[in-house]
Length: 247
Ligand SMILES: Nc1ncnc2c1ncn2[C@@H]1O[C@H](COP(=O)(O)OP(=O)(O)OP(=O)(O)O)[C@@H](O)[C@H]1O
Image 1: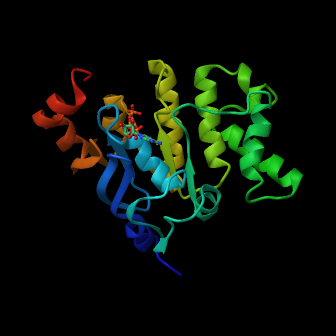
Image 2: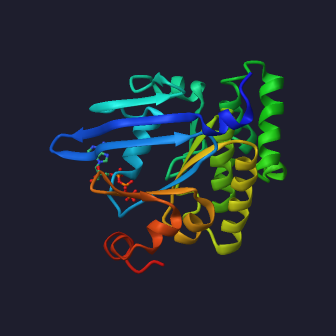
């Protein structure tokens, strides 16, 4: 049996020389990144830097033109999204796409079915996830009737229902007010304490500062900087060129 120490230092996800070419545009250009189990890595950069494309390459919505992605040492770059989800990659989408006519519970159950084919078990698991994200009292509500903040939590719940090892969060705080952001951070911190690994695309630098072990800066598809939040967010060149005045 592995010790906890070994697990903490274990490389969970490895990205080696990964690129994505769309006709003339290299949206992701030769990215190499090693993610250890339990890390929280924020990915920042201007609009069009390739952040979402990078997530799509990791979760399987896209396959890389070059390079290799490995999860626990297994090459996954040619696997479909559902196969990667089964191996432990969960994600949220920038534009949340819940099935609006279905209840919050049903939305989460769709994910839970992947690991729990029995209806009753999937339902119990989905209810537990809804409880975890603070949506238990909205379980029967139509997803389309939830507030923005509730829909963000539902997005997280749908990812959690897959029982992932690593979760990719694409701007889950966008459009939320300070107190709602505080609640989502609390939720993510409690999930992290249980051992989840996170990659997050986030524009809110306060969130990046409070929540990340490491920050990666993308610009025009390339990784132009990588380091602790403190190092990256205080580097004048990064602030000026890539983050504007949004501090
Ligand atoms: N399917 C596609 N076909 C062609 N070009 C694409 C495709 N998807 C993304 N792009 C282009 O790739 C570049 C990177 O886009 P991407 O959405 O990954 O950036 P981003 O950093 O996530 O930006 P934002 O912060 O605005 O979400 C952009 O120039 C975009 O227009």
